[in-house]
Length: 388
Image 1 (cartoon, helix red, strand yellow):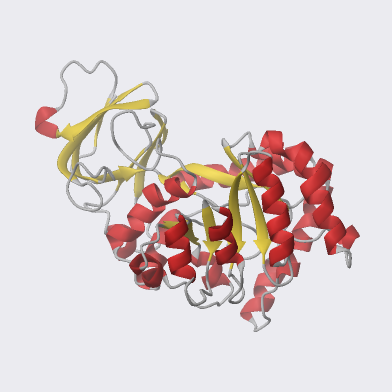
Image 2 (cartoon, rainbow, N blue to C red):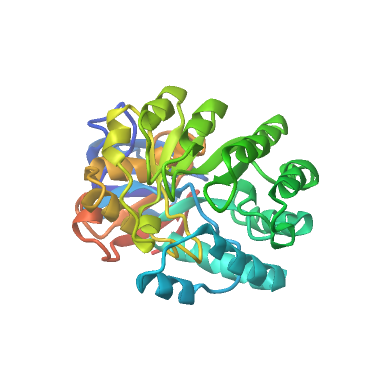
């Protein structure tokens, strides 16, 4: 396949111009599921035998990488959202509503809903996702959710440490022992990552450390929900344990940004969750100024961020969190790939997976300039056109 006559191509390859590695008047050659060549249209290879896609001067960029989602669930939390919009404060306990609905749902019901959300994300340009468990909260339930998540992606995250299971109410330490013991033993072979919700109403720093340390001993990479509801120890714990990513970070404490940057922990921001909970905006500028790598993600879940739309995330990052359009696009592609310790996605360069999005726009800036407008024209995943 040859994608040609691209007016502005974002590559995220530092060999090209600017932070986004932009090539003007570009082409991309694809061989199988990999990118074979990238460059100016005038130098495009001859003899490409496959189909040609004419971008007709439009902008193109790597497929978005969504490094924080909770796609496998059942049920609806419209009433909770409505109550929040009428003034009730968000607390972590609403997760139990989804746990009950998910436990009651069949595999087919969960699979159908998760696939619907994954397809919805594809249509808005997301070509790679991370998917967490966390709505089973018992051994069999977490195994079931991880198995279903593995049908959608190879970046599967074990989140048995989401909240304390209802049958362990008042016995949080006993539940932590289950998560880092029998539950982790059963779930580790099905996951690449482990995560924990280190927050008021979920797990304190010692409980979170115990879960993540046990997961690390099992060979899983680490992620953490941190500093969402108030300043707390989650960001520093991520730095201490060398987590790949600390997510949310709505309430940074003094020195947190520097600690994350120094430890090489990616700061993953999820602005739709802050919008939906009427929380302060994360201080993206403090993180960037401290030298931290920033990623953007949807946090797609039924309670606090029920969106699969990465262009909306980009628009909020620019207009509300004071990121530049270039910073936001990089963070939603290469930055999120780094949060997953991936270098085969989030970039357009030779050898990378052939994930490409063509916009109905002349520039990547339009993703923030025209918020909410469906600008994604064509989506290519691993060399196959999946939306056009």
